[in-house]
Length: 239
Image: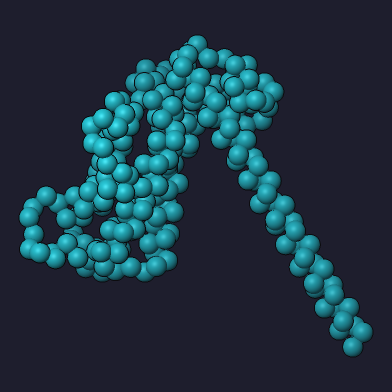
């Protein structure tokens, strides 16, 4: 009995220690991510305000409220900061949506519509929060040095691997008969493109002067256009 109690106590102690180590690791990763985002946001603000060439690492550190040397704990150079900006917009939301959709096991268009509306609302909100990053990317991508463009494209590829997850979601819907046969690569990019271009015209350029609608209303219109097209359907045909 004593040995059994000691074994149980040892198991509980080891389990608790493991849980604590896991919590500490998660907390440390969260702090690293927060500091990294803090620096990226500061860089985006300065790049938008002074231009990429006009901003210095020292100024970015001051804007972020960190020591200049701290920047190099997270980024190799100012170039590295620039090509990392897409990570601050909305790329991870695509994977989050796909995981949610697959976990719920939805196989109806109506359910897909609701999930995709939620995805777009979150994506639009993220891009609205990071307009400086969007502006900088739109302004500087065409004029980047070839080497920097290459690095940027590698980072962008990470985004498209997440789009491939969205392609997988579309393919699953095709296989279940929910969606018709279509080119999933084109469809995935078209869906994301609809959102990016709309946010560009609605938020980045003139602000909310074109269409005074909520994110939910805009997201639903975009999703319905993607899912059902523009052709008139019989009453109730969308579901």
